[in-house]
Length: 76
Ligand SMILES: [Zn+2]
Image 1 (spheres, rainbow, N blue to C red):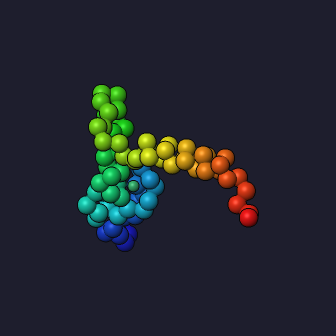
Image 2 (image 1 turned 30 degrees about the vertical axis):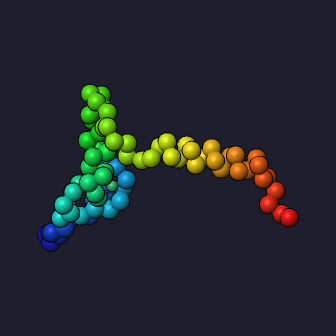
Image 3 (image 1 turned 90 degrees about the vertical axis):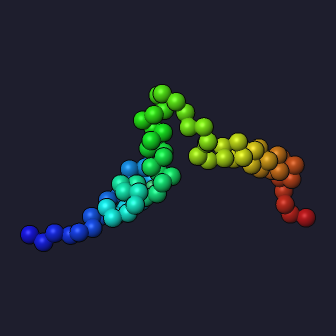
């Protein structure tokens, strides 16, 4: 039976295809590796640095809502 040296698998976090030769295998990147680490460790502690700028996202959303209500009709 022919054997392939590189096996294509998917990152368990973001489902991106990864090779078993990748440095962060079985994850696609260090980021996903840390996310997985945070998953099983979340019961014990929370990662100090947030993975995404959650506050900024909320601020952006609020601004978008405000912008919409200020100027609901863009036609002149
Ligand atoms: Zn990933």
